[in-house]
Amino acid sequence: MICVYKFIKSVLNVKLNRDRVVVCLEDSIHIYVLKDMKLLHTILDTPLNRLGLIDLSPAGSSLIAYPASAEAGSVHIFDCMNLSAVNTFTAHDGPLACLKFNADGTMIATASTKGTVIRVYSVPQGTRLFEFRRGMSR
Image 1 (cartoon, rainbow, N blue to C red):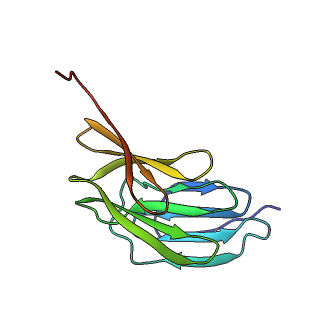
Image 2: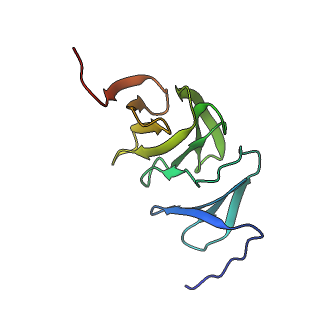
């Protein structure tokens, strides 16, 4: 199957698993069903996301994570199967630079634009599990 979709704004990121295709624009996220590429849901209330930060967990859970704020380092978790918000939690004081689910979608790693700390949280609870710091410890 070949599909062509046109968007008014630039596509900044695309993620897919065996169930869903997620397209990230600067101010919206579009969720498609992989098997027929039908639009399932559009999230319009996203903060400005110029970096296209988004990640999609593996098939089965199909959770997406994206910045909940353009300024603060909050992460929003959304369930692509049930089309519902799951959790929002603060991961960093400053804006996010990166976020990534682990292979089974039970944890997410985050980093801020400051670049000194990587934090790992449980999903969907948002409980901090680990923190890795750059530099020396005394």
